[in-house]
Image (cartoon, rainbow, N blue to C red; front, top):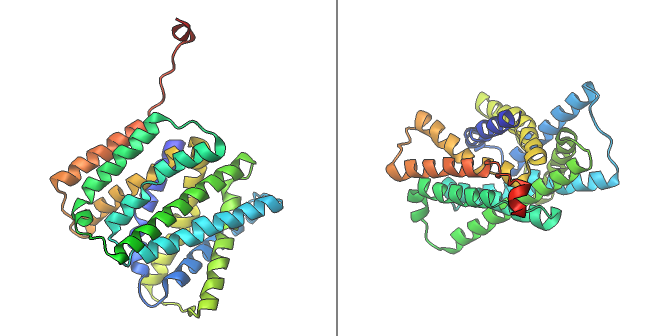
Length: 298
C-alpha cells in the first residue's frame, strides 16, 4: 500500500508542472492558487460528508489546520512561484529536494525521532544527483540580487513545506486523518490568500477556455485532492523524512515527460545524476539491519 501511494504521489506531482505552465496567462497566479485549493477543499468536504467520514476537530485541531493551510497551501506556493521569476525550474527543484534533509532535522527537533544515517546519506546522494541533472541550468546563474532573493524565497517555501509536513504528522498522531485536515487546511489556505488578493487589489478573473479549465481541474483533483492526501498519508506512515524523498523524484518524472513532449535530450551527466538519484532512493528505503541481542552482548 505504501509503495502504491509513493508511486502515485511521484507520478502526479511529477506531471503537475504541465498544468501549472498552462495556468499562466490572464488569471493572476495568486488567484489561480485560490481557485485550486478552494475547489479542492469543496471536493474533499463533499466526499467526506457524503461518505460520513468527516472527523470532528477541537480548537487545537483547527488552529493546527490553519497553520498547515498557511504553510502548505498558501505561503510555499507563493514563494516558489515568485522565485520562478528569477530562477530556472532546475534550481528550484534542487532547492525543493532539500525537504528530505529538512524533514529529518525537524522530526528530530520536534518529535525526538532519531535521524537515520541511510536517510541522510540517500537524501544527500539524491541532491547531488539532481545537481548533475540540472548542471547546465545551475552553472548559468550568477549571484545577482534577484538570484539571491529567488534562492531565499525558494528556501522559505521549502521550509514551509517541511513545517506543513510536521503539522500533518502532529495531527495524525492525534488521530486525525489527512482527508479531514487537508479539507480544512486547503479551505483556510485559500481563504487567507483570497484576503491577500482582495487587499492587494488583485482581480478575480477567469479564463473560460479548455486550456485553463482543464489544467485547473487536473491541479484540483489529481494534483491536490489525490496528491496531497497520498503524500501526507505517507508522512504519517513512513515518517516525514522518507516521504519527502518524493521531492527528489518529481524532477525525474518531469524530465521524462519533457523528453517525450518537448524534445529534452538526455546527456551523460544527466544520466549519471539519474543513477545517483535512484541509488539515493534505495538508501532512503533500505531497512536497517537488525543486530541480534546475542551479538550486542558479545
